[in-house]
Length: 352
Ligand SMILES: NC(=O)C1=CN([C@@H]2O[C@H](COP(=O)(O)OP(=O)(O)OC[C@H]3O[C@@H](n4cnc5c(N)ncnc54)[C@H](OP(=O)(O)O)[C@@H]3O)[C@@H](O)[C@H]2O)C=CC1
Ligand SMILES: O=C(O)/C=C\C(=O)CC(=O)O
Image (cartoon, rainbow, N blue to C red; front, side):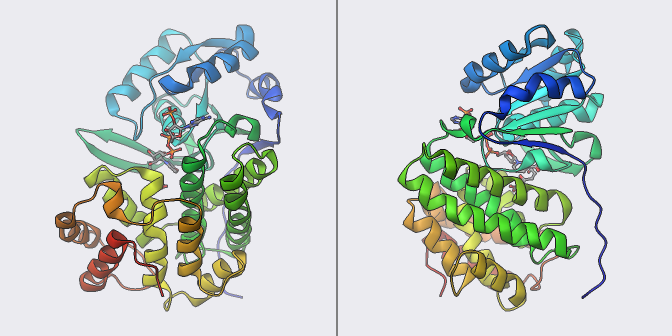
């Protein structure tokens, strides 16, 4: 076995259908008295239910979380937290809401309790993102890692099926790249393979019935494992491409992950055979890139960048940006093959 270093990121996880009932106890365990509840405008009703559960421990609700955490929103939320005397933040929602909690924590050190309702995985990472003047910057800081995470599959029953599938593919991407990370280790690989297996089971079941609570549990369990991988080891080509396409061309986050993943895996397949074997095994298939493509396509998820609104004329610029700053990838980054990868992702060609 190769030598490795493993530093665990501390997080307390409360998992299970109905586990929201433990919220007040968990806030108490954080030593907090006044929680600011964060949500998007559309998830206000859920945030109100959370605040009601907290009773006197609820300082208020900030319901203006949006994708990619604009700096102005972060400043506004920080100010509201200060004005209300909040001593912790409860983020209920997807990665956008968790991201807002992280922006508050980065500035103030307030502990975050996250209640994720998508599979993006941000709740398990010390990674934060902030967008200023249309440019998103990400960083790592242990202060932003949520202290407690409540995974309650019941809260995900309202997540539309299409979004559930693309969000699950987003989670799977963290695990897939974790399997060939430069700083990978056997513990993260175990979690990655099990996370992919759980998501590979959940996706067909959710496609059949979005209210299947067992499948919701499997998906959230997979999201937890995959988010943990994202939080512990470095990502590579796939995440770089998705950040380029999401950030510079304003394409939707989970959908871009869904479309790009099979092609990024195909690019890396020969350079990372063990990772590919584990992904394929987790999905009960022969070829990792084809299995991931089939999983998306069979369950109604988008498979072509052109269907997400990218123009063919954007592909050259996307390839340039993706090559601009060097980063680790199992196969060296070469502009020509990368441009071909993007062309296949644009057209939605099944990897052979
Ligand atoms: N820092 C990190 O480690 C990570 C950060 N991220 C970041 O997180 C963001 C993406 O996260 P993601 O979760 O995909 O995006 P969002 O949080 O924006 O959620 C995606 C969609 O899910 C909907 N939704 C969420 N919860 C529910 C629910 N209970 N019922 C119905 N609909 C629901 C949202 O609706 P509505 O808007 O109406 O609430 C939204 O349309 C990106 O900014 C990404 O960069 C992602 C992964 C890791
Ligand atoms: O961009 C961020 O906010 C940080 C990480 C991610 O979004 C991970 C991902 O691409 O899913």
